[in-house]
Length: 467
Image (cartoon, rainbow, N blue to C red):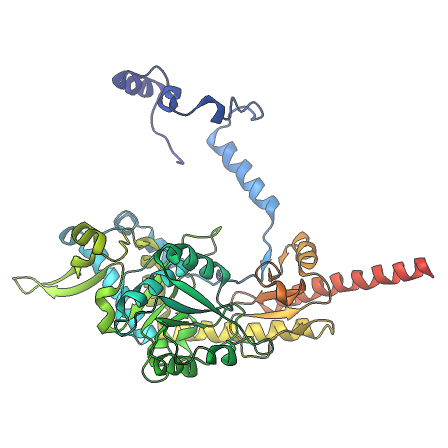
């Protein structure tokens, strides 16, 4: 903590009150072989001002690299008002409304969040968030298996082009519940779900089909066809969407006219900055007929005996403190602070503001792709339309390129070889949000050009050596 108010005398009085000789005694249950020792390499203690100066110096030495990495965490502009308001004490500490009558402000905010999400997704119901996009999808899979009463199947069609972390999380959470995840291939030319591979499962019994929009490659899927196919084959449809993209494309509640049954994803693009991996929050919406199978909380608006507006938690019977083992997943903290920020962010931006940001992201991605492919040695890997990010094929190993770019303060993208070895070691996922200027992209292009030039020079030197 940044400020500890206790004097040495006060600390001594507290230790005497609990019968301890020193602060170290409070940790005596930790085995000695697990303790780090005396920290002899640390220098002498510093005053607050000196510590602040030292830490700022260390931070400056890290530099401020240009970020062209997406892969599920996006560098968007967040208006200053968002976190100025979200970190006020009224919101900052009241993250879990167990007692509705004591949390009217928080409950109203969550109600407004749900209203915005149902409008953005064109769905009937929204909960008050989950932990992140990956666990939200896992909950959607569990929900689909529970709710699909016309099917006894515990099988789910899961595209390989879905975010690999999402696939891993879903596997972790459902593997011990007898649920089988059947992987769908992607088309090597378009990057979309391979419709021929999907057709192999026509008329088979599956609980649901998962439809990403966009997929991990940034490629847009034919969501109308996929949603219609799933319903024609007796499956529920689960949409995994980028919420920002839904401000300019058809939302999941309108796909194939009937819409998906469940929509989920990560709310990070809605006011959560890049912050060393989180915290973020997951969102989930569904149709009215599935609402009693939805995990998490739902906030309702009502009036009291005096006719005054009030907000309350609804459908409490599904929570574990009442139904116990028969309950859906009990999402307690509901990432309330992130939802608070997202609600403020959407309120400030409005529908037009979100749409403008999404369009600028799309323009910047196309501009970045044009600049890099103009070098002549880099080419797009997939032909399908893309949003936020796209896959490029480099003339050399992506890992080496990224390492060199990072040394020049450019975070050049995401190496796909770890999760998609079939693409080779030179497939690079690059992203450009509205925060990247034309000058930023010119710098990236210049550094990439220098990397490629050094490769050519190295090859020429090698040939000269053998000549």
